Image (tube, rainbow, N blue to C red; front, side):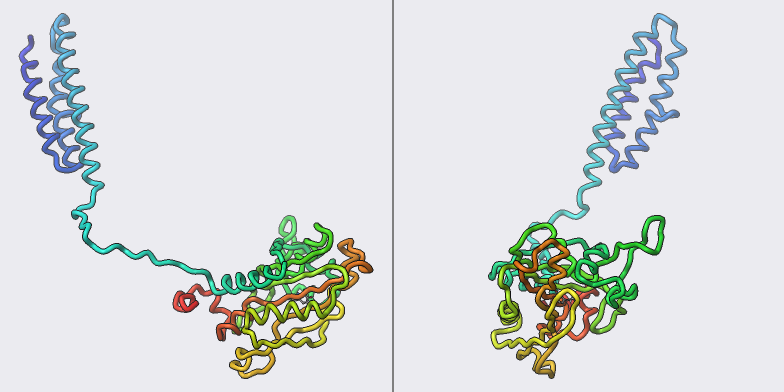
Length: 340
Ligand code: DAH
């Protein structure tokens, strides 16, 4: 046996001891380089294999290889131990410390108001309907009896989306009101219809204390036989008493909307309006569905009658909570949001 084979056992023992002694991963790497690196002690030993006579090589190779495998296994095992140690917290955990309280979020005031509105209408048989915020001119205007030359269609009034190839002209637009959903629902189902549509709408308004380019509306639509303005007024009164307090009063003023005839604006009066220094505050638009709108969706205006209304959710929230700037709803300032 060549003399250098006597060194295998002590070198192995030294290497194993160094692996075990390594306190961290860099230390372990140093220990590996010392023995198994290209200039390591164990590697030097293996290089001497070539100097042996041919008949001694197999046995010697076997001895060295077995030792090398053992070293590699020990190295891998120690590496796992040290990795685990590195992942553990440096300080011992104190299980007697008080728990960390997780802050509970809550619903945005606009969401709370919307849910209140929906809850009130559900009590009297309305269901929630939905429609796209990216609309086309047909549903937003034409089908609502609002012809191309109507001022509401002025490009100033909304955001048009670019057409194919970035062309400026396109009939896709961000909806200016939730009234478009009236058309979508009536096209899909036959009467009777009893829906409300809460949703986001878009206008080319500059933001100030009472305007924002995006805001929210609730649309209502009721279609059946022999529906009257009395039904409309009773329904609006019921919901507003629920939202604004039991002594709330409602009044209708004549107005114009192209999709209703007759049309009204709704004012309400309550302790809240008096707190704002006014007896009556304008709150919504409404009217009896125009016969042309029924024609457009394929309802027979001789058989069916109905009413519709629309109002802004922000405005309701501002009056109810005494908020003086609409932009507060969108700034995500927790000092504001925590108050609701
Ligand atoms: N769409 C109107 C607006 O955005 C509100 C409105 C008025 C809706 C009368 C209606 C309605 O359904 O009948 O100002």
